[in-house]
Image 1 (cartoon, helix red, strand yellow):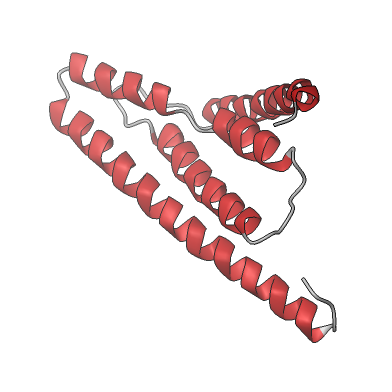
Image 2 (cartoon, rainbow, N blue to C red; image 1 turned 135 degrees about the horizontal axis):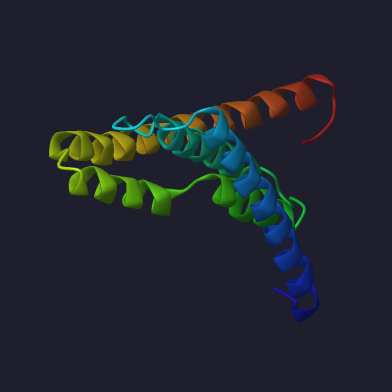
Length: 144
C-alpha cells in the first residue's frame, strides 16, 4: 500500500469500527441477556457478521478493482467492529464460573458451528450475487 494512503485506510477502519461497534451495542441493548440466560444477542451478532463478511469478500473478489477503502471500511471496520468474539469468550468464561458447564460448552461449540456455517452461506450468497450481476451486465450488452 502506498504510504500516502495509510491515513485514509486508518480513518476508514476507524469510522467503520465505530459504526459497527455502535450497531452491536444497540442490538445488545435491544436484546439483553437475561440473568442466567444464554447470550443470544452476541450469537446473533457473530453469525450475522460472519455471513455479511463472507458475502462482502466473495462479492469483492469478483470485482477487478474495488475501491481501495471498501474492504478496510466495510470488512475490517464496520463488520469487524460489529462482530465480537472477545465478548463471546468472556461470556463462555462467565457461564463456566456460574457453574453452567453444559450451557457454556453448548454456547462455545454452537457459536463456532453457526459462525462457520454462516460464513460458508455468505460466501455462496456472495458468489451468486456476483454471477447475477455479471449476467445482468451481459444481458444489457456491457462487460462487467
